[in-house]
Amino acid sequence: MKTITFYSYKGGVGRTLAAANFAVYLAKLGLKTVIIDFDLEAPGIDAKFHSLKVPEDHKGLLDYILHYQIHNQELCQIQDICLKVPFGDSTESIPLWLIPSGQYLSENYYKQLSQLDWGKIFSEELNGVAFFQQFIAYIKEDLKADFVIIDSRTGITEIAGLCTQQLADEVVMLSSMSSESIKVTKHIKNLIQKSQVAQALDKKIDVKVVVSRVPKPNDISTFKIRCYKRFEVEDNKLFFLFSSSLLEQNEFLALVSSNKDEELLKNYVSLFYGLNIELADKNIREQVENISKSLLSLPPQETEKRILEIAAMYPHPEVYRTAMRFFYFTKNEEAWINYGFKMVDLIPNDEEADNLLTNKLSEILSNISDKNKMETRKDKKLIENVLKFVEKRWIQGKLEPEKIEIFASFLADIGNYKKSLELVLPLCNRVQLDDITHIYIRLTAVKAASKDNQPELAEKLSLVALSLCKDKLEICYVSQEIFKYFYSKPVLQIAVDLAYKFDGIDDLVEVLQDAEYLQKLSRDQPTLYEDMNKLKLHKLADYFLKIYERSYYNL
Image 1 (cartoon, rainbow, N blue to C red):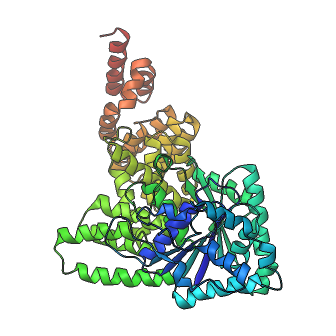
Image 2: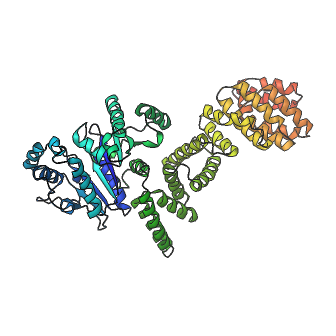
Image 3: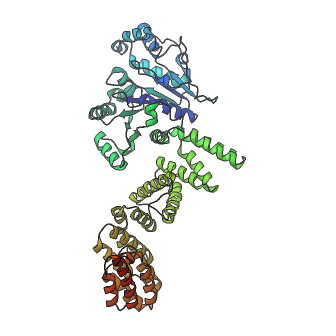
């Protein structure tokens, strides 16, 4: 059994809601879970479960502790203060139990609370440490629980210390980005990790930090780095629950209403999966295997319906993998890409999802004909996700040069010229690449450099690209691509010289005549006419002169 405490120095960061969601997550995986409302002074975790009704005569945690303080014995068996939690409005049963704080809406509750004496409970006479150790042992032995989730009191209090240093195997600390919260969160994290109580019980408590209810930044990577430094925590122990407008309007359990806010659900699942729940992994894999076998005997439409139900019910990497594979083989491109993204969000280094997505998304980027005019909001969202995924793979060094070139070309087309150059320029020095790949890389760099007003760089890249050409077809293609975006006399001179060398001057003239950028350039100035004449391309010179004259005289 594993005990995980959810703690925050101050309220308003979603601690109780996160604890309730985590309990539901575990129970949905078939793991017997007991959630305890240890926030005795501001209780109410039962209110998160709308279908749960606490009987008026039901005893809770406060009754149990106070009875021990007065009588030096347990009030009752642990089962007597537990309540089975119904799952939403469905008839489905999940193994989730709650130990409530007590009848906190009655006046008597606060009279009881005022009688609570932690000094007496932890005195030599009562030995509170042993009492609470036995309390946890009863949950393990009598309830056969796999997990205990504790919703702790805020602040620096006896209850908070008990929940985070004695009872917990792991602590999830939620914090805002206020200076006060960060300062105290770091302090308490250090207290927990150096706790003498934990050491006496032979415990090494793992602490995770969750930055909660902050707006999602545009540059998440930079924000995360800043948070690692401010909270002084390793990257695998820091998580985020970004603000949800829906949650602010009407609080709900994301793990129950999984279709309400997909971003919030993703944040929760990333956190929960980061808690290293080996038992949960084993359990969900068994369930996925059983479900996968049953799908083989179902009609395709029924199979798809069941897959979607499973994915909503069990937000877990292996479920997403099953969904990704199913929709991939049924050729539902939008669906399998969606579940592929979900996979790599949870397991960034998953090879299967990584390979499928990298190949497909490179194809998508290279096939989009009008990058600046996405037709639908869905198109824009897909491209946004594609760019995030591909950039992440580039940062990790997992993109092949050919795919980097495709990515860089797309970035240049949507106006991110500097990023495009950042990607392709290092590839220009890769000697192990073949000449064709080097040509494509430099053409993309020419496009980005010319649009970024770097003519000297564009010229240098153009000259190298032309020098790699081995026949008239390559000369014509490279010239066509260069003169879509850029023109300089030295580049034209080299293109013409090579065209004569490979007996392709007539083909090159045709390419130059059709080049839109050259036509546009010739409307504004007679430069092209003069340059073409000097190169003895008189027919082409006359062509561009006519364009200039028509533009000049507004014909």
